[in-house]
Image (cartoon, rainbow, N blue to C red; front, top):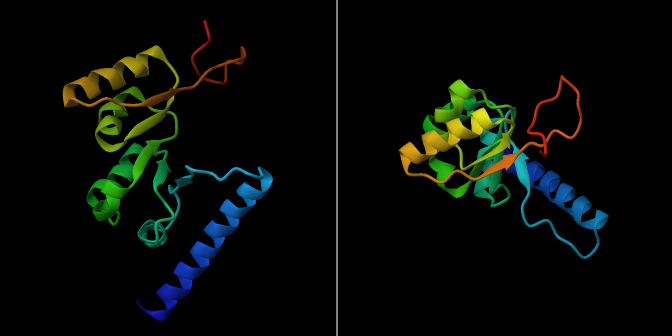
Length: 149
């Protein structure tokens, strides 16, 4: 491994360990068991170094096409099997099929319509798609989500 790459890897791991250490210090006696790295703007080489070092096990992306290019066909495709990939943004209905094909989790189901689309595409692929439901706890017209009722 070239010296510049070793230096970068060392800096990334130092930062990662600093973050996890600060989390542990904020909650004495508890250690985060699952930390999601949002990789949407990170350099592919940095993500690759952290995955290979065992630091990233869960990654979050908020653009279906960008994630598909990166994790299915691109620089991170060879490492995809070792990472749980979460979709973490607003999912448009027309991107539900690609999201189900690409991601392991969808963390932002904000309507019955998108839930039905995800379910339909997952069923077609013989896949169970874990999801998180975005609750809307206020009446603001600018915020999305499923009302508790």
